[in-house]
Each structure stands twice: as C-alpha cells, then as structure tokens.
Length: 177
Image (cartoon, rainbow, N blue to C red; front, side):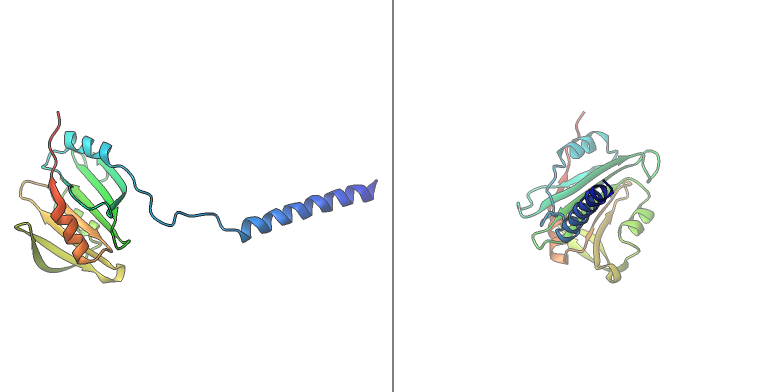
C-alpha cells in the first residue's frame, strides 16, 4: 500500500513538474502590434466639458493607430480642470501623444515634456509651437500655450516630422450641448 501511495505521489509530482516546464518553456503570446482603440466617447465628453477650445486630430492617415485615450475631469491637475490624453502608434511604430488641458501651463508643460530642454520654436499652420527635447528619454515635444488658459502638448519618441504631422492635423472640436 505504501508503495502504491508513493508511486501515486511521484506520478503527481512528475505531472506538476512537466506542467511547470511547459508553462516556463512556452512564452505567453503578446500582441505584435499595439491594439487600436476608439477615442470617440472621450472626444464627445471632451466637447461637452472642456472650458477651453479643445482640439483633436482630423485627417490622419489610417497608418496612425490610436492606442490609448483618457479624459480626466477635476483630476490630478486640480479642481475645474479638464485634461485629455490621446496616444498614437505612428506609421514608424513609435509613440506620439496629444495632451491638452486648462491646468496651469508651466507645471503641465514641465510634466509632459519631462523637463525638456527648450529649442527654437517651429511654425505649424501659422502658429509658433515651442519645442523641447529630453534626449535621455528619447523624447521630443511641441507645445502651445494660450493666453485664454489652455495648453496643448504633442510629445513622444516619434521623430519631429511625425510630431509635426500630428500637430498639423489638430482642428477645433465642435462644442456639444
């Protein structure tokens, strides 16, 4: 009887070890590419809630895949603020993000650019966009602050040409009741 119990226990242990080898040896599948998301609901909510003239990309090619969106109201940026975050995977497979808010411009820009080093401004669609770079993070940023109290930052590890393309696509969002 003891031999039978011992053999059963060893068999069970052998099965567990074999299962552990399979789990460790065969990696879990991961998405080869970022998964596209819809930002339609966040955009609709932004158009209703933003106390500033919100902007959103329009006319980007299908090779620009939206991969993340989030809208914060009265969040970490303080009471009365509306902040939208929209991530894209660019045609080059890099990240470009649109960040916009009515929060304090200086603090928001510092945070979104990771205290980037200021570069010469660059005109896009007749507006002078400020530029900054954070080489240690591979980050480039373009930002615009308005006397009306809102800030737009386009940032990421995408190249300058792709960031400019995203900036050039920005159009006002129609306010909805």
